[in-house]
Image 1 (cartoon, helix red, strand yellow):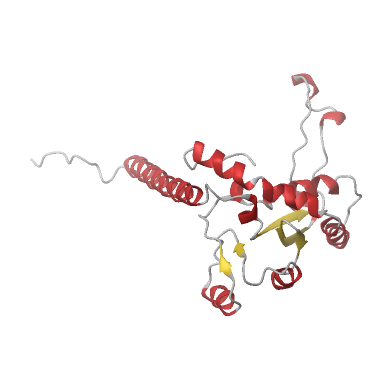
Image 2: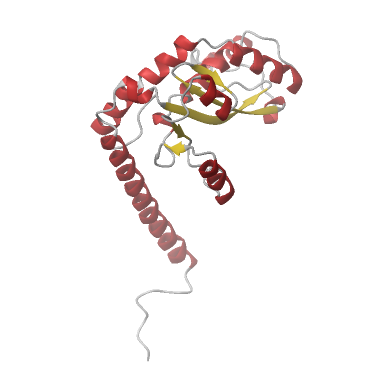
Amino acid sequence: MCPEPLVNLRNPEWFQRTYAEVLNVVQNFQWFCMTNTKLAKCLAHFNWTINDWKRVIFSNETTFYVIKRKNKVKIWRTKDEQWKEGCMEVAAIGGGGRVNFWGAIASEGTDNYLIPKVHLYQMENDFFYQHDNARYHVSRQVQTKLHELGIKLSEWSAKSPDLNAIKHLWSIIDDKLKSRSISSVNELTEALSTEWLSIKPELCYELVFTMSKKIQKCIANNGKYIHY
C-alpha cells in the first residue's frame, strides 16, 4: 500500500490556501522593495532646500467626473438617520461622464505644456521634470523624446503620490467644482479650464515649499506612505 502523500494535490482548498500564502509573500516583498527604494530617494534629497525644489517641475494626471466628486462628504448622523434625505447624496453610475486632466506646476505657477513652461520661467539649463513612473511615461517612445529635448528627469519610485507636490492640487480644484452646477462633460471641461487658470502662483509655491517636510516625514516613517 502506498503511503498518503504529504500534499493532497486533488484538494482544491490546498491550492487556494497555498496560492493565497504565496501571493501574500510576493506582495509583502514588493512592498518591502518599494518602501526601501522610496526611502533611498528621500535620503538622497534630504538636504535639498527650497531653491533646489524650485528647479523641479511636478506633473501628474487625474480624472474628474461630472457628478461624482473626489473628496467624500462626511456628516454626523445616528443609525436611524441613514436613509433620511438630508443624510444621502445623489450619485450616478460612472460619475455621469469624466474628463482626464494632465497638468504641471513649478514654484512660479501652473501650465499644461512642459516646454513653454521651461522657456517662460527661464529654466532651460537647470530644471528637473518629475512624473509618476506610469507605464506610458516610461515607454521607450516617451523616454526617447525627453532625451531629444534634453529634459532631465527627477527619479522617483513608483506609487509615490505622497511625494508629488501637485497631487494636493487636485483636491483643491475638486472642492471648487462643488460650487458649480455641472451636468455635462463639456461643462466640466470648461469649469476645469477656468479653475486651472485661476490658480495663483502663491499656491504653487506653497505646495512646492512643503516638499522638504514631505521628505522628512517619509524618512521618519521608514519610506512608508504619508498623508499629503
